[in-house]
Image: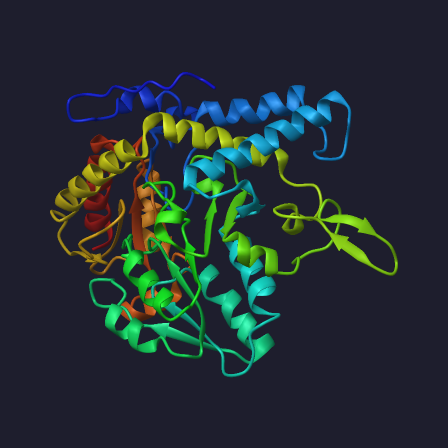
Length: 417
């Protein structure tokens, strides 16, 4: 892996200028202007270390995994399973048997819905989510309800964008079969105090799935300390490649779940009379996996750990504080989602300016943000909005980029307000 340039001052700060040199895309220009990439909640950028790790595999060790005795296959298998161990360590799973490689958070949640929920849920059973969820933590449960006759229950949120815990606790019932919650809201940045919610569910013997797509890149996550049953996240939001993600599952539950898909590598023996399934984690990894993606994810974990998740969290929080201060100077700007505990995500609107128009004008200034419903239409419905503008920060962003965002917003307001 490329050297990671970290300056640890007395305050534990990162050397952001040095870190930015590890990200080739941050050197490019958009419409003749330096790129200010502030769309990290949608997808982060990749350091050279991740790109190199994947290229090295393709150039030197590409072969299928688990199926060959030749050198390249064994090298590929070692790299692939080495990445699984890095994931296990990163989230503190008890065993690599609890680490399932999937395409991303969405596939992980669908796997749980179809393999855990579909065989066991039935009419009268309830699945409890919150109003804050990404579509990926809503639609799979709606599909499951259609398949099984179960019912989807939704805990409300407050005007600040927090899940109403008392309402959540009141919705827990003897019929609740699963709780599925975001760890961090992608639309608002709210950090949900999941320990409290998990404890309430655990007291009733209800298993909990957490959508960790927006949490794992920005804070230290320990699945054993959380005491959750399932935890899902995606590589592309944590400086890794697209098309790779992880489902952590409690081993006792995974063992009891049937496979979701059938094919190669998830079997021990096949005949026309009977198939014997493979053990964990391979029971849930049918077919040739995204080998390069897993290797890239492992390299991304190496990179993040070399910086330190605590330093990353501190740097991003400082950016959030600065962004809130600077954005508050923009006339007509309204913050959407003001929870006291937030990740480095700011959603907002500007009077008389549609978010899509904002996004277009900002792009002409070299500033990349996200506009729309952020795959969280119920959140937009709650606030009575068709869309918001969302700036989301990573550890490689700077105050100067936030200043450029604010200047571009002033320009947009003068043009369209």
